[in-house]
Image (cartoon, rainbow, N blue to C red; front, side):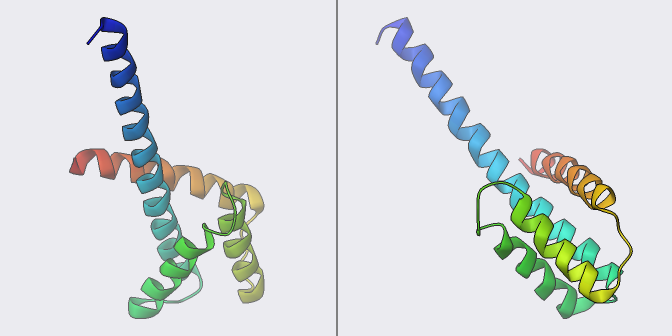
Amino acid sequence: MSSFDERKKGFEGKFAHDQELQFKAGARRNKLLGLWAAGLMGKSGDDAQAYAKEVIKSDFEEAGDDDVFRKVRGDFDAAGIEQSDHQLRRQMDELLAEAITQIKAEG
C-alpha cells in the first residue's frame, strides 16, 4: 500500500470517528437538555426520563438543532417557563460541551 493510500485510509478513519463522536455527543446533549428542561417544568423520575426521550426523538425531524430547540421552546411556552431563546441556546451549547467531555472520559 502506498503512503498516499495509508494517509487516505487514516483520514477516512478519523472522519468516521469524528462523525460517531458528533452523533453520540448530540444524543447525549439532547438527553441532558431534556432532563434539565424537565426539571424546570417540575418533572422528575420516570416523567423526566420520558421527557428526555421525547427531546432525543425530536432531533430526528430535520438536520441541525432547530428541531430540538423548537420542541423545548414550545414546551417551555406551554408550561409558562421563562427562558429566553438566548438562554436556551446557551444551555444547549453548554450541555453539548459537557456531553463531549463525558463521552471522551468514557472512552
